[in-house]
Image (cartoon, rainbow over all chains, first blue to last red; front, side, top):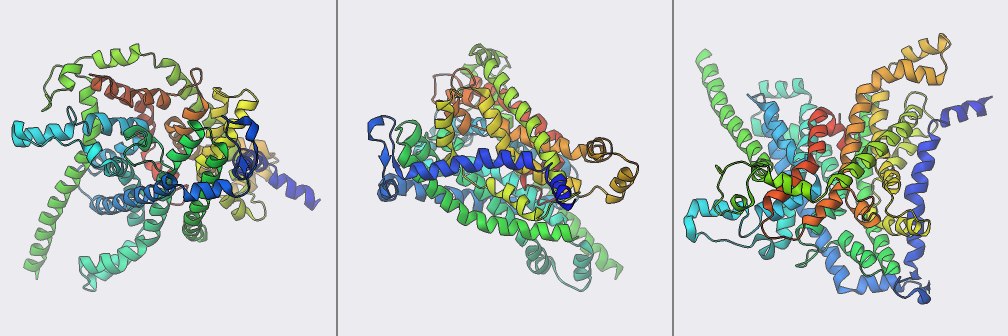
Length: 294
Length: 280
């Protein structure tokens, strides 16, 4: 009797669970297997067991190591800068003023542009040295002799970072604003009456309260940005030393058809992500526990 | 005493209005690239390429005509199919699952919930190759159903988390009353739970739709001429082709339009979806 009760409870859950295991876990098991194989679609006869040689080749390859470095720079750059902008803007929006809703809507807009479209917009309409808006504004201000830099060629990585910061600042801002608005206002008012000034209230009350929201937005942001493919593919096509790991794996697999090596690189990315994800899960579960205990 | 109070509030107001102006300026700066894209899309190619830019140039639909002449409709139709069907599938799978994780929870329901979340953290590239090889061997490449299945797996965890947090707000007394009245499970779901969580379902659906619509990597690798989606179509504009800025801007706007509409509609629920239901 109890058994059937248990299964009646489980039944609604099973379709989703089975679906997720088949579609997301199974392929990854295959990736691990292929990462230990010699497998290049251009040389089908040489398929076989390769031991750790794919991993050795991936980790000693200068390109891959550069890609790992770029991935770290790109992720850290985008997440940290958008986090700082997001916090400042969330603080600005956490006050009542005329048109606050309109400003919030304007702020969200960059996040709602399809990522490829956003990258195209930055590449062609803003960065382009001959007809982009940035150089256009320089000419407006300084006249015909204004400097006309080629933004992407001069600073390829920063070009990608800023296009992504534009899209991710709204994300950070939204989570931090929700955090600010969940502050216990009566306690803060009491602190104000007790003579604490604005900075003290921010430093000793707002910031500690925001900590978990800062962690959450940084870690969720990292999980998305670490995987970024769209912006790198669109703005530089991985050129000028900007190929990150997802782009490099895409190329190894899609252009070079070296399946074994692409899989080994994939396994390495997963190990890196698990390191971030462990922290992310912990941070989400803290928020989660607080919410369910409410 | 009263004098001091007015001084304080007076200074506060002045500081406050400065901050309000700053907020407005920042908001305008962030939306400016999109407005620029909008304006440029309505200029002729010659005027769009002017430096310094000519803001007051006459408006024209030539950019949109040029874009639609390149034949984007099949890819837009594919994106709609993939996004709508995968979203429907997500809700169909996620709703009962969320029910089993909140209203009548299974044992160790938090573990299950965190399993769903952990799948979001597996990088997409790591699973790409086996999926490609599998699709190739069964002749499933360049098939929109492959994307529908993958987008469903991509969004299912988000929907389970969101719907669970909505369902946990359903008062248990109502459910007990319904079961006393003799309603069975599907009936309870339909007539008691569904009305309460419909707003939650709507916002989860909008977020899943946005993520499916935006996806590029799977679509780029797994589709060709038949099942190509709108973002893949946009990658045709990555390399410059002479005077084409107005066309690019028109293309980017047309493809982004469904997301902009869905996003503005779900503005209030955006945070909850993006944080996987962790933040309300």
